[in-house]
Image 1 (spheres, one colour):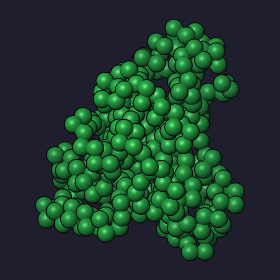
Image 2 (cartoon, helix red, strand yellow):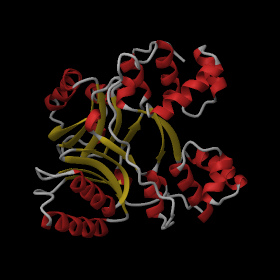
Image 3 (cartoon, rainbow, N blue to C red):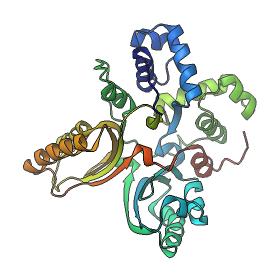
Image 4 (cartoon, rainbow, N blue to C red):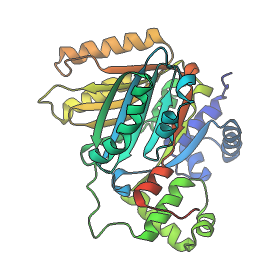
Length: 353
């Protein structure tokens, strides 16, 4: 059963998605809702497990070179109940560098952080080979996004605004630009690594509690928190359980852009796909975009998709239809998002906290 949010609860949900790092006082002034309502709404959301706030590491923070999205179409004889009992499925979803995974009976979409393409292939190929031996896979596609040339947009606030017709004037429009790899002078110390891991694993804990768990002084924890967020090594994001409040469909897409395009062309395709549905996220690199959006139903999705594709094709921006995986929210069997195991593995943090 879907939850029914009041108008003020919808505003609070928007505020948490738009300003995930703000205190209740600052949030109240930004969204025009009093602090007591914010406090009560957050408590409800926590009880409902509706939203969680994540500290998301950048690629350079953990020494990752690429982000890889993996789209899989499964054989009719391999629904989720068959796959989940296999050791290969457990190896897949429990592989530390798999930071997200969402699956239905027929499809799955996963994302991975990797130190290099070789690292990805060495670790992932044996897993997918076992899937093939088990006759699970009908088709599979990999798309690699090098962090040093890829931009990223987290759009949960836009999704909340669009789905509830809030028509907010403070919608985010920033895209996180690519960052260079850390230099020898800026590489993380062992204390940096442990602190960053603690922020990712326990995004809601206070600096005092993190100090107790890590054995690092509270002033040092506080200083590193400021440093990591200001430098872009960490960003704060909201993750909403959309199944509980709205919509019918979640769609993942990958679109290729014609050769010879410029940044303006890339931005035009990016904006077009944000108009097809309520956008969730986008990864952009020269020549292609990977992202996701929500839709209230298939007819609306098809009409919007056809309209935008006709426009993009007439301008010569795309030459082929995008890869599109449509998942009815009611049919999602498994969903994971967890960066902490990846951070521990990539930074070689062995201390239990």
